[in-house]
Length: 187
Image (tube, rainbow, N blue to C red; front, side, top):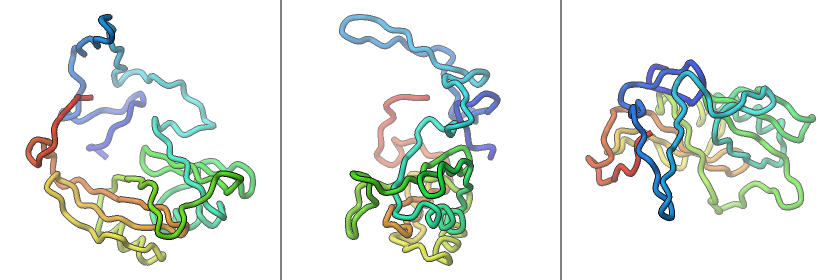
C-alpha cells in the first residue's frame, strides 16, 4: 500500500502527492483567508469508533442488508466492521475507504432497473483479478477491464441491487495535462 494515503495520523503520502510547504491564501469577497491544511502528524477529524474514519462515506440502499453485506464481501472484498440492528445498516470497509449499506424505508430505495444515478469508485491493486472474482459471484460486468490514457485500468460492475461500481487499478502516474485534463488544485 505504498501508493495509498489518507488524512489519518501516521500515514505517509508518496512524494508525488505531498502537500506544498506553503498553502496560498484564499481570497473570498475581498477578504483573505488562510487555509489550515493538516499534515501527516495530525487529523482534522476526531476519531470515533462508531463511524468509519474515511472523509467521504457513501450510503447505498439495499432491499436486504444482510444479503448485500455477504455479497459485497464475497464479490468485491468488502469487510463488515459495524452492524446496526439485524437488517437495518452495516458499515463496510475496503482498504482505507468505507461504505454504509442501508435498508429500504419510505424515501430510501435501491436503483430501479435501467436507471443509473451514481457510481462508486474503488481503487484496487489488480483490476483484472478483481473483475474475475466479482464475475464469479454474479456481478454483471458493465465494462470489462480497460486501460485508459490517464494511467488507470478500470472495469465497471453492477451489484445484486443495481448499484454501479467502478474498480480502478493505477498503472502509471500521469499528469492530467498529458491526456487533456487540467490540474486545478494540488492536495
